[in-house]
Amino acid sequence: MLRYIIRNEVKTSIIFKCICDIINNTLLMLLLKGLGGRSNMEFKNIILEKDGNVALLTINRPKAMNALNSETLKEIDMAIDNIAEDENVYAVILTGAGKAFVAGADITEMKDLNTVEGRKFGVLGNKVFRKLEKLDKPVIAAVNGFALGGGCELSLSCDIRIASSKAKFGQPEVGLGITPGFGGTQRLARVVGVGMAKQLIYTAQIINAEEALRIGLVNKVVEPDKLLEEVKNLANTIAANAPVAVRLCKAAINQGIQCDIDTAVAYEAEVFGECFATEDQKEGMTAFVEKRDKTFKNK
Ligand code: HXC
Image (cartoon, rainbow, N blue to C red):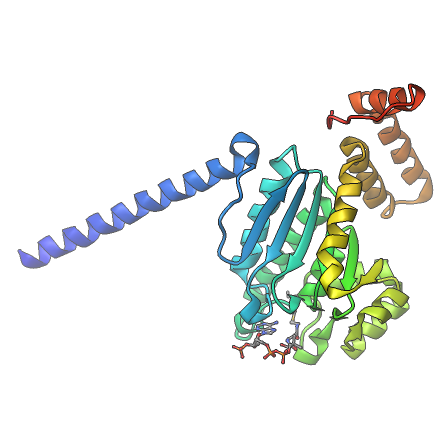
């Protein structure tokens, strides 16, 4: 009898936990999708803040050098969804808390993976990084420190990289017995050229910010205490332009770079035409002709 009662109590508590989980998940989804997603969401491993038309996403596991475990990747995925749905966000900044930008995928989590699990981890990271790359808002990486392995790959999924003079870049994977797995073999070659990408990946060499600038991996190097200010200014400069036009430029560059030049310029003609269906094109050109300041509406 006692066993029967205990078993029933356990069952009831499992059912209760399931119902609570469903309610929690539903509330999270509503928070994500609802009402323009302006609220600053609560996460365990990242911080998402919004200031005016700029979102600031900080990877926040400083004790582990912001290493990307599955949980952090899933939180980044949710944050990107939130940013995508917020029509008042025109530009995004991605940075790391503490002395690292991101020191790679989480080696502790990867250490004992088998083939299937390893592939699944790579697929998860690639899905999130590709979503970031395809996000229809410009993303600037403010690389404050170590950007190694998955961290370098994360910065490569952003549109623009600005580095602190203390930043360090590299793809050290072959030293751990693995290949880059979050797009490094593909995006690094596209950004710095095939020869330089091969040298960096084969040697696992870590380079400093000045060398990263020299090879075109970053756009600019600034003093550490000026990094966020500099990147926020850049984000606000971008956000002051017509958001739809900026979005279409990102799509045209990202699509065009994968195509032959005829297809690419045909794509550009399409997006150029699309601009003339926007209120902001009328506003931008009318303001120029009338010699007055423009006010864009993201429409
Ligand atoms: C898990 C990490 C980590 C990582 C650092 N830590 N990087 N944990 N995964 N990638 C942890 C350390 O274990 C340590 O934890 C704490 O962060 C502080 O690091 P230290 O090494 O003590 O700091 P420091 O001496 O300053 O050296 C910093 C560092 C070094 C140069 C960044 O930590 C380092 O080399 N990290 C590994 C970099 C790397 O190889 N990245 C590529 C990973 S593979 P404790 O608990 O001891 O304090 C990858 C593949 C991507 O990214 C694709 C996957 C599919």
